[in-house]
Length: 194
Ligand code: VGL
Ligand code: ZN
Image 1 (cartoon, rainbow, N blue to C red):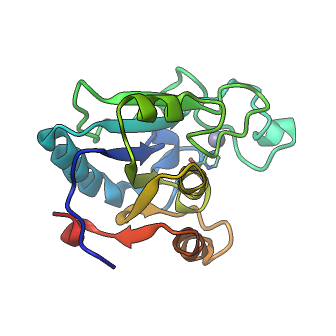
Image 2 (image 1 turned 60 degrees about the vertical axis):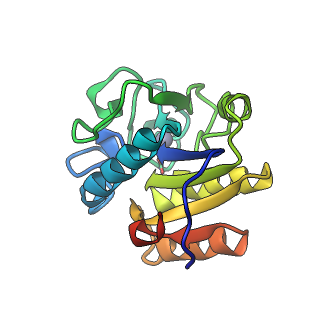
Image 3 (image 1 turned 45 degrees about the vertical axis):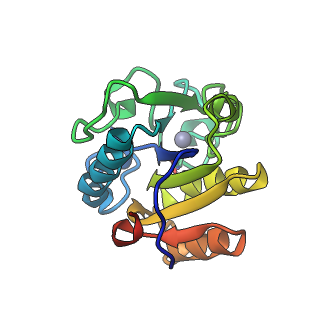
């Protein structure tokens, strides 16, 4: 791990911290709630320094192709405008936060925050070159968002203490971390962010 100082051109990207992915939700990530205070401290840090905070949200139609009743792998989750799709009430969000909805079309898988969204255009407009990524779930939306960001030339710092995995198969989350690292992401935590 390396130590990083947050600087101009940096942004915090918080992936899918929504009720359905938290304990009690329809696709709950175990211990997902444990990262909420950590994410709040990251948000506070970026916001205080004047650097942007982007939040992605899974924002599916009721007949999204990823739902089991549509032949997909997942229970219904994060249906647009339903309580399960809301950001956790335990998140402390500044007013200036930017929200990116993904998986909006029935056939758009939406694992990556870059898939069928204007995230890249927004980042370019803001002069962002480095992304610090937190959220849920390590082995799906975090993984795909990070790999897409790396492909697009962003430097990516994965905030290891602020992610949790679905672990459909035990070890998936750890494998995802290794995959992100292999593709060039730096794994860091709070203690190494100045
Ligand atoms: C996610 C499964 C289905 C995620 C979203 O946010 O990681 N996982 N939809
Ligand atoms: Zn989804």
